[in-house]
Amino acid sequence: MWQNEEMSIEEKLKAAVNLKNQMENSFISLGQLLSEMKRYKIYVQRGYKTFNEFVENEFNMASSFASKLISTFELYIENLDKDEITVQTIGLDKLNMIKPFVKQANFMEAEEWITKASEMPTAQLREEIKEIREIKSRNKKTMKDVLTEQFLERMVTFFNCGRKELNFKLALFFQDQDLEEVRNVIRDKQHNFEADQIKATEGNEE
Image 1: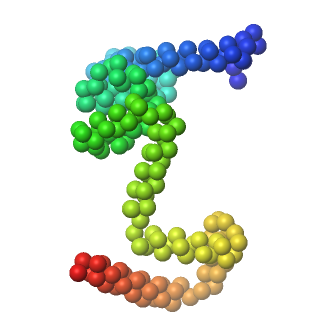
Image 2: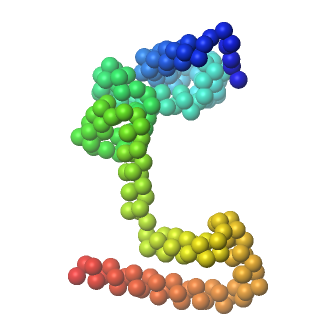
Image 3: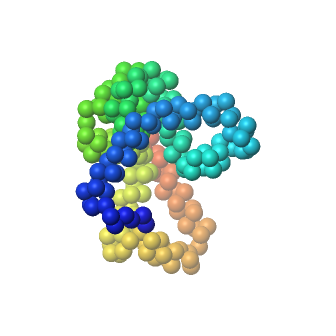
């Protein structure tokens, strides 16, 4: 671990902030340069087979971080035509936090996300994104997912164990069972379950 005993804690904090500010002031320009190098295959001219090899060897930079810089530049500057000052003011961290939503959004929704990132503190933005993802995750769940989660939660509670230990207990239970008979029982129950779901859906549509 890097240490400099001659620097005080305050000096180290100040140095870290300065380095972070340097990064914030250059990530767009760096993203543009990397994007152009990748687009025009500069790495091939330097004797590399892949762009990732080129970045990691020439700049001692993780290829995943280079991809992050490139995608940030291409999305916000090239595709959405945002000005560099606005993008730099928001910062790399928050831009990457909202990137998955901006990519899927229409123009107006993308503008709303960018405004939100510009105005919100990082912690608050992160919390809102977490809530949105949890809601989407719940909405994607099918009745099979719900039944499975409810059953596993009941079993974990009943046996007072974790999921891994529950899997072991279920393996003990099933190891001596007639699997053909088990399959037939499961098939009948699944047919009944699916039939009930169809009836419930039809009832909701009426």
